[in-house]
Length: 210
Image (tube, rainbow, N blue to C red; front, side, top):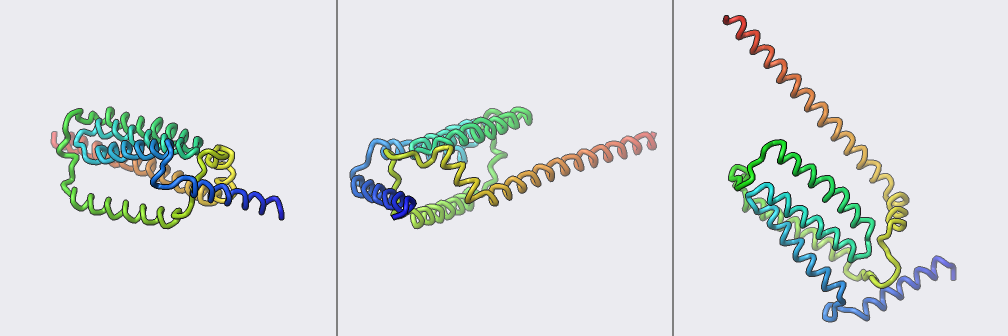
């Protein structure tokens, strides 16, 4: 038996033992914590999309993204958890809060922020959630993670999988984000140029009328 076959056999035996030792009726402490944090995260996400106060929505978004980071930690994926904290909680939400402050968004209720399509949005959200849950359950129905074994989501394992198996999609995504950034800069400069041209034309019309 080759070393790779031996490792695969040992991994299969470990996952089988873990599946037999723990079931849905005898959850471990980690599984209970995962469920509780998941409920808190779900509640924060629901409040984020239902509240009419923009600042409160941003703060509840912090709670939801932080809960996801805790879920990753419970799944022994510490690298993904810290990426979640640094990029989403530490950058995206801070940028969102700066945008709210710079645009002088109202602190209280914002009725104008509600489009009135709550029923359509709820139907789309339920359909998307149902499809996502069905895909995940169908793909990982018999997959068990041994949380007491070797970490499967460490920086080394994640980096090796990312730059060996997913390097082309990763680079394609970076190019797509770069194209979106360049497009945003071009559109903003064009809008400023159009505004300056309109202001110049208005000034000339005013001077001609005088």
